[in-house]
Amino acid sequence: MSFVLPSRPLILGIAAGAFVVPVVLVAVLPYIRSPTNRPHREPKKLPQGVKRTFTPSGLELLVATPTADTNTKQQVPILLLHGGFGSALCYEKWLPHFAGQGRPVYSLSLSGHGLSPRPLNFVSMKAVDFARDLEGTLDYISSLHPDAPRPVLVGHSAGGGLSQYTLSNTQQETLTSGVILVDAFPPTGGWRVYLNWALNDPLFGLRMILHGGDPKSPLSSLALVQNIFFGSKMKKEDLQEFFEDMTPEESIGWPSSMMFPFVDIEKVKQHTNGKVAWIAGQNDVIMTPILMNEAAQAYHAPLTIVPFAGHHILRDEVWKDGADAALAQLRAWSL
Image 1 (cartoon, rainbow, N blue to C red):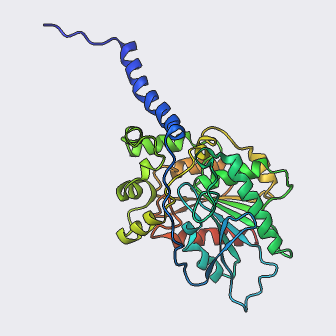
Image 2: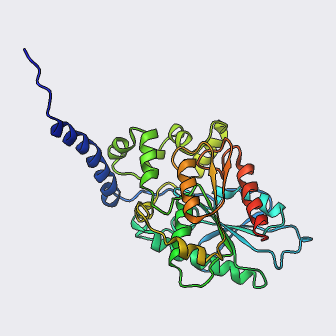
Image 3: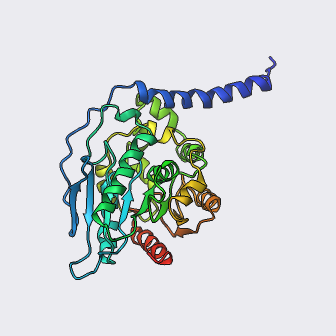
């Protein structure tokens, strides 16, 4: 009995279908699934020197200010912005560290994250919606420091993508005094990020389908979070604490609206006085150092690689190295 091999077009068609169908389902299912029954979140005890406040629009804003004997009247304030499934708590280690270096520093929870109010359309909110949160908060912080330069913005992951989007679309001449992008969405879009994610988690698409399109599916266990977010030095107890701090749901519209080229690089540079810098984790498997180097080169901006760090430099075991890299960049800018 002879065996007839399938034709090449048939093989290519099957392979294409195996890739395209899950991608389409992953893109569509989050919009049609039932909203997450979000549990009540008790406010977490904050590190010493950090306090919880809220912006005039009701967004959670963690604040760490230098000691009273430090003159910060003209010191540039810093706004830290989280990425997907994050909140202001992502920077709970960076906040007191920056303040200890004499820096007035803030960390924002975007709408629907942390203790910020959740809009009814949260699951479909796009970058343009969250950009209003970010620009309003930058203006608010600037009003608190009338004698200082505009804030420096530090954005991580999808928050780094949102930082670029906001700076690219603002109508203000100078929105920030500079932006530091930490393992951020590249200006060419996040499609390569999610390709890297799928390569490191082959069950990415299938698992999300089986989970009914839950955007948190790829980060639904400690092992998955460890694999994608952290370097090899992350301790189990720290991983568990991070997992419990994660926002339980996410807007699929946020990363989807930044999937392909979404930034005017020259406008970003214009609205930051030309001060743009990148920081990347050496062991990041989704925003890889190669991808981050390409992004930094597109901006003609400096790139610092943090040894041993995974994607979530903010809470990794080597978090201090990441924070110090950001502080070093501020000094390089004389800010």
